[in-house]
Structures are given as structure tokens and as C-alpha cells.
Length: 449
Image (tube, rainbow, N blue to C red; front, side, top):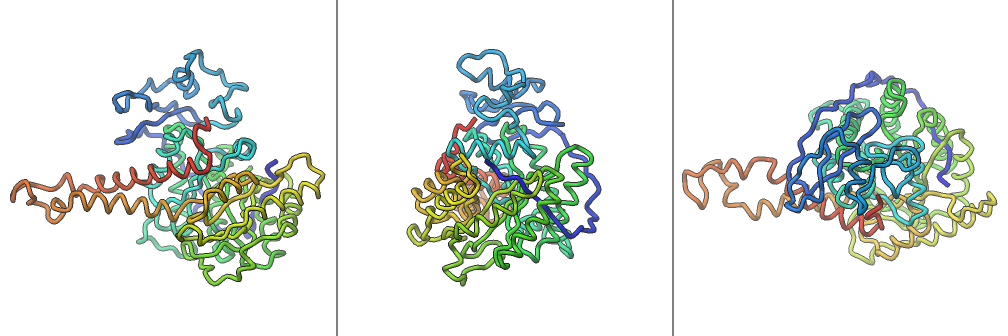
């Protein structure tokens, strides 16, 4: 089962606490291979795009049609749409899981479904609206849920590097902006999304405090938090302090029905300013007893929910296959140890998270999923795929990208349609969607709904 417990501390004097109205303007999608749209809590009925249009064109279905009705039309029987109730929006997913951003019990139900059915959800770090859109497009193509997450540095970039980040103001504002962007579009792509933030070391806690203040305001206005979950990475602190701070934060987050991801042990390598390249090799592997300490303390928090990023040899960054020495058995041994401790009939009581998977052997990834990994972080590979799309576009059209006027077609020919920023950016999105398709496949996360 997914564990109960959540919390946050150090009240943040948030200038961001004012509730922001969620924009629900219609968005026209260009250049994709098709998306589903659907209904979501408090969202207007979206325009639905048919991914099965034989000509590859995006034709809008009547905007009042629900996502459930749309699914029914696509099914073999073509029968009536589910009427809500126990059927839910997705026939293969728990009834609480609907298109759009998930919070509370719906997050728990989705992660439990992943653990039961043996898939893990890609959690993709995003730094722009373009990278968010690529994630949503890829999830729609895979017919699968996705996690969209922001790091502190990524959130600051989302806000704009020209914005002052004193007291993490820009990082908070960027994450909030990204959250509203995801909330506006996720249901229109027809996919369930867990909206998450990535590594937060002790020095970054004010960043999480600011986002929690935003979620508290959003909860007061709408009955749910702005974000689905946050991660605290206090793995560099003594284990007792790590757990104590996580418990404190879970107590605050539990009041908002939010999930907490915590990390113990150290993920090697370097990622977004977190440098563990010189970490003690012993710290790259968690012990069952340590994972039990976390489970025991966090499970005691009322209405808490949490996942555990335990270390089993994970390393951030890109490495040649075979250079990362994973030991997924650590996760399996911990599950057995904890199930025995709590006398549970559930052989996998812990929901694990997989960090630093680039360069990992596919069989290790599959084994980790078998041992209860429900989420795997994706960043390094999509950074490359995004750049690769831009690089390929430039190589293909280089003679048209050296000046505003003049190209192989004539000295007076304009090049505007080639240097229009939308062109290389769309190329980057397409290569990212393709790379994410491989990620979804590797994680058994295809045709989930």
C-alpha cells in the first residue's frame, strides 16, 4: 500500500500566497500526432483531439463531449459512455483517476495501480512550457499517465533568468507558473498528471515553503492543493535529522492531501547543481533497516502519503551502459524486511522511486519495477533529445539560417519561415516526444488506459 504521512515546516512568509485564478482559455494544438481531451475537476469541457484521424490531422470533437464518451466511441463496441460512478474516466484505471492534474487519493490510487500492474511512471524534469507540452504529447501517444516535475533551478529558469531570485522568489514563481500551465493543458491532452517538484536539499527548504503557501491558498479556494507532491532530498544530513524534517513537512502537507517523496542514501553524480560525484560508494546503497526507520516514522503521520527514493547504486548524469552498478535486490530485501516487521500480507508495502537511471541496464530497471518502483526520473536523456532536435534542424536548414535574406533559392529570398523560433523548438519537441516514447516503453508504461 502507499504509505500515509506528509509534512512541512518553517512557515514561509509568502508574498506568493494570494490565490491565482487558473486560466481556462482554449488552446489550439499545432503539429502534434493527436491528443485526447477530457473533463477535469473545475475545468470547462475541453476540445478533444482525435488521435486516430487517418490523415493525421487534428479534428476537434464537439467540445461538450466528455472524455469518457470519447473513449467509448474509440472502443471496439462503441457503446455508451461510462456514467461516472465506478467506471471512471479510464476503464483500466481506478475511478478516482481522471484527465488532468491528480491530487490526494487519486495520486495514491494511481501509484498503487502502477505497483500492482508492474509499471513505473516517467517523471520528467521540465524547464519551459515547450518541454511541458512535449511530455503531455508523449503521454497522450503512449496512452499513459506522466509526472511533470520542476527542480529549483528549472523553476527559476521557467520564470526567466532575468528575474531576481532573492529568497527563491523566482524559483517559487516559476514553479507556480509551470503548475498553472500544466493544469490548463493536461486535461486537454487527455492524460492524468502528477505535478511534482524534484530534489530539495536543506538549503532549498524555503523554496518548498513558498510552494506550500501557494498550495494552501489554492486548497482554501478550490479544495485541493496546487501541486500533487514535493520531494525533500535531505540525504546529505544525518538519517535522524532527515527523517525528523520529513515528518515535520508531512504534517503540514497531510492537511492538504499532498504526497511527500523523501530520499535516503545518496544518488551519485551531478544534477542541477547537486554534486555527489565524490560520494562515499557505501552511501550509494541503502540498508533495509534504514528504509524501515523511514517507513515506521512517516507511516505514523495521520493522513500522510509518501514514497521513498532509496539508494541502490543510482547515479545522476549520462554514462556508458555497464558503468552504473545497480543493485535492485536492495529494494526487494527491504520490502521483505518491512512486510515482516508490520506483519503485512502486502509483499510490497513501500512505493519506491528510481533516481539516476541514465546508463542503467534495462533488466535492472525492470527488476526495480518488480520490487515496487512506481516512478523513475527522466532528465539527462530528454535534455539531449531536446538539443538533438534543434541541432538536426540547424544542420538541415543551415543555408537558410545565416541571414534574414538570401539563401540557395535566391539572393533576395527571405528566410523568415526558417528562423521563426517555432520551427527549431517544434523539432526539439518532436525528438523529445520520440525519446520519451522509449522511456514509457522501458517502464512498461504503455497503453495503461
